[in-house]
Image (cartoon, rainbow, N blue to C red; front, side, top):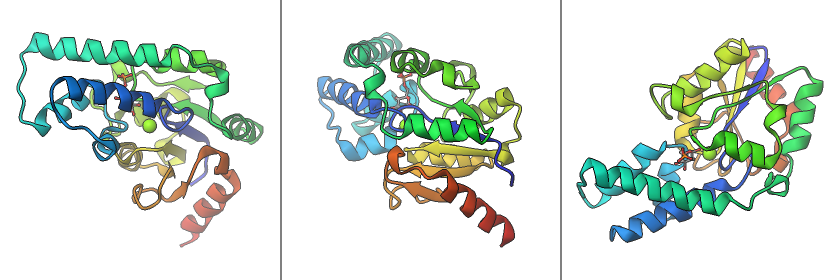
Length: 222
Ligand code: BG6
Ligand code: MG
């Protein structure tokens, strides 16, 4: 494989919005009398809004009508938007800008594959919207992570074959999506959790592009 593009997830990879999604979903669950902890949240990382709410309701076999379902989605998103209101460039994780600049110097394209419909707003707040060669649109893909759709649509947008793309994810569902898209998967977080990833760095500040390339070349010689 010849690396030509790196496609990043947003929430939990480039910034700590994963924590804000957790706070807002926990408030939704609490309102419904459903327990929701960090372990539940781990399963929801990378999962889109509708499927996240379905997961929470299914925990207590709760059935709500369509109007209530839509209200819950709206309320969760309103709280999330309040939580991210104050974010700015200083909320970008350490290591992101230097990683992007290493990739640009190496002529590697940079893509964004987020499941979030708020992704454009978040990257604008972070001040990094102009650093991407292509930004995927979560609203326009048929199946959300762990399906490969968003990663494949970004590869298409970048005009790079999936097998020449590296995906970067903090979520189990996201790493599965990368693998289903036939890309090399880099995990950000705990290697014991992100077991499907070829390589895991504890955080973006430890992202080592040379190590990624070395691992890739070792894999293609074995
Ligand atoms: C993913 C997050 O990036 O986006 C999930 O990991 C979140 O936690 C999902 O639910 C959808 O986000 P949004 O902003 O469209 O509700
Ligand atoms: Mg994520």
